[in-house]
Length: 163
Image 1 (tube, one colour):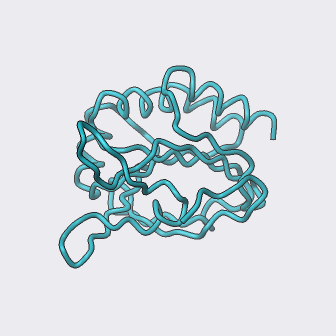
Image 2 (tube, helix red, strand yellow):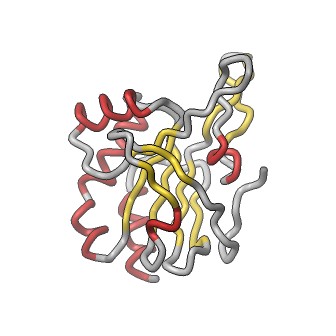
Image 3 (tube, one colour):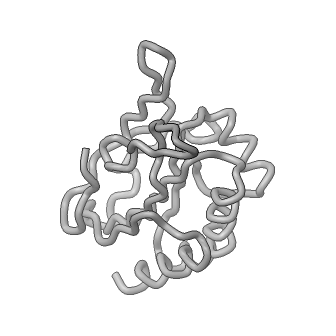
């Protein structure tokens, strides 16, 4: 599916976090929600991104926004990642598998971030690092594609404040 353009309604979802608690889009109605999609727990770029959002956590909260990270590994992996890095916000597991036991993430698909990638001549499916800012009305207020981690969380915070 294509990426969701600003002004469009954000697709509904329900996913479990690192503590096996379910989170749904409707849980965040009435306040801004930052959803950042990242490729994999405990990799260098994903750790830097997750920690940058954690470092600004109080500022996001002061601005009235919630932050969640989303990737394909199961809650157990998210728990290990959150504990190791001291992450206090929900890391959501979009860990559905297809009949062959391969990742088939429904939410990543709905948000258009589950794409074909290639590395060293090999093609595979993976998550494009993308962030959505969903407004209090449930519509996409802003989207960042192919995110470069340095300075990204700061830029998202500024966009939240501008809502």
